[in-house]
Length: 266
Image 1 (cartoon, rainbow, N blue to C red):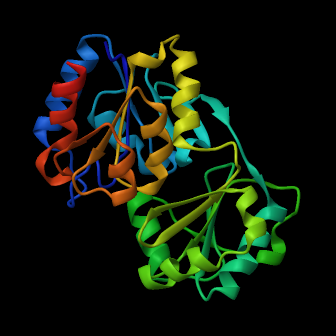
Image 2 (image 1 turned 90 degrees about the horizontal axis):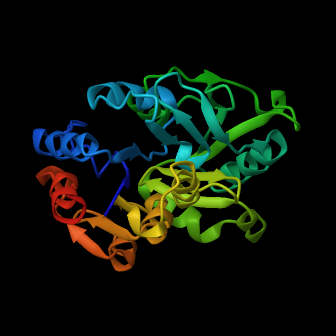
């Protein structure tokens, strides 16, 4: 029996209007009413997800959320952090230099949930809107080598990032690198992924491998889809995610999450 579901947001639980369908809400409610743990697993920071947590009623003492692709895991009722993994300012500056070399823009998040950019751009506006946060413009030379950051991102048009991914310096492979959308290429500690987050919560809730399920659509969901006993890809998901999933559900526009919960978890 499935007792833990980790579910991505954008392109998965949310439709193109950034809404949760009633069919999805109903299935999630039925699952949690039966004692299941429904956990949002997202690349977003806390500010970009908390309104959704409240909308779904996931605010009990046992509810948790995976944010920053697993960089921070928190308890929903009091926002207590139960797991966090950071990178240093030195690494942030290294990735920044790579963004300049590749002709892209750069974002990074501090361990205090602050969003920074070295240059305002149209992609910063997208980040601000999605995550309900204001970006601060900062000179990269102001970043201390020993400061702690959750993640940094090379951002830009799809064509630029498609090319950038192929041209990254091999030294950066010591980091976890995932494409969370067409315009975001994210860099974090190698000890960070949604799959590692799922594994942590499996122990946290004292569950067995065969009691877990995960749903997603993009590369940053791949690790948890592989980690879960039942890994479900969205019909609108990338081909690499679909090829690694146990099942493929309907699209995010057609309540694919709710249908998968009913079919595989209820």
